[in-house]
Image (cartoon, rainbow, N blue to C red; front, side, top):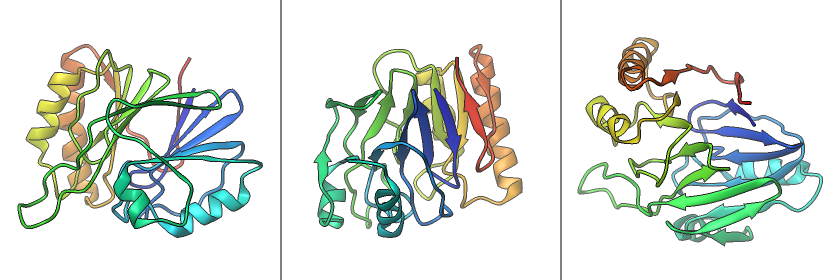
Length: 212
């Protein structure tokens, strides 16, 4: 499995000649993939999904593409053929086994409505919680950990890592930070992951984590 980080919250996963795209949103530059099999959207916020990305990716796909998202995404973007998923659901698309966790976005503020959100576990290897601190069942070999957002503070990220204890982690959801802010967040993430015997790789947009 290869995991390529795009800008902000977008991930591209490649396995056995097929590609899975997760959360192509407004902070992510346009990109192309080969062998697109599925797209997973964790929630409806614009930094995680845009019509422009969906239309381009679907138009360039060599065949049918499975679209997975919680109900709120289907309501916000009704012109696509969504497979609606919630926490506890399991789906498959090509070589990708997808297990979904959670159901709600983390609280930003009591005045802001909480939207649907699902975390996704890909092939029991990569877990991405979307905008939440939902803990999946089982061991997490690789965690894409949100590192900066209006809905989190670094102490909550540290607590989350203490619970999940990933063997490998890389920061994501970091576009709203300055370089200095990212350096501080990455240092905290690295410290807690390494304290449990894990390791951290800081990926820049376009860089790929290659897994055996």
